Image (cartoon, rainbow, N blue to C red):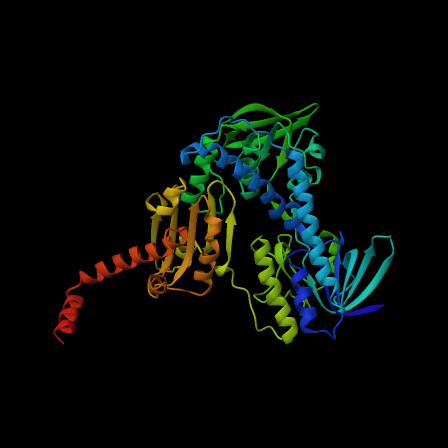
Length: 488
């Protein structure tokens, strides 16, 4: 039986960085990375954020092409053709480059091994791995990290068409661009796919159960995206709709109920984006002391499970934000605690950041006003409209706003929301502001270049501090102190 100091299950952004960091810090210890595909990258690289953004950048250029006249460029011909085969080739090239580079880096670590296999727990110290060649091997470990990610929620539509319905994984495996597609869901995956594919020429029907989309966003931000969807000629937004049945012959027939009436819609393809579930079923965690909550692994703030020798990271963890970059943050936390042999580091998701690559983008760092109110934190909230911003006006993308959620007592900025065409370009600064607990005063003393979108941070900080000072000056006691200070 082979013995390892550390075994990590899952080669995505939640698992691979743990191996890389721990193995470098501990060259004398043996580390094993088990991945079912034997490739590094996980859901984000193969079926999520990277391939979707490869399509999104093409869609972005199409949108810019349509807007050229606004910038004084008149094309003699407005006709263009989407060369889908080139987009597919570009996707394959980028993905292969990235996974090959990650594997090369891992294999340079003499104490780390990559094994293409599936794993299940025999007990709290032993694993059984089923290799690609069908052979089985037992492994003993001192520490283990579960980083198996998540998968699309199982389809359960009546009508017998479930095997023909795509998820995001099916789409990126087949890489076919249909003429029409029905998308079921109102979350981030559904909205991104709808907007990207519509610009690539696909007619979209978007089915949403309620009258709003993106329920994890503040209502005002979600409303901006909703209105953009409504204006898109290639998207039919079907709200308050419950899908009852989906059948398939030459094309799909979707029976849905809307306002108490049964209706039917047809499309060439159907994509289901109704949520994701943790990949825990095959791990046989019932053989361990690892506890689950609603199908996901329960951990403490150090990402340690109820078994002191087993950690978990990423989508597989209950309540963990489902982002690749957050998984990398969790991976660093685990790797350092394993190296130190003590849980000194912990995760703080109040400092998390993310970007929705919708049109316009939505970026957020920290917590929302609703979250602050729920926790009883007294806050100040103010917005800066990009309609008054020089850079936004120059680029003819002046829709949207920047919002600060500021802790009233300390004036620290604990939440930032950005709704803008290129919100992703300044999301990093928002993340730094929140992570480093900067205050309004800190931003006011920062000299941003002009004209840029980033200077909006200083402008909004000055606006908020100005209001605070105006309120203070209304108090007679403050006025008296100022007069005494001038006299002295």
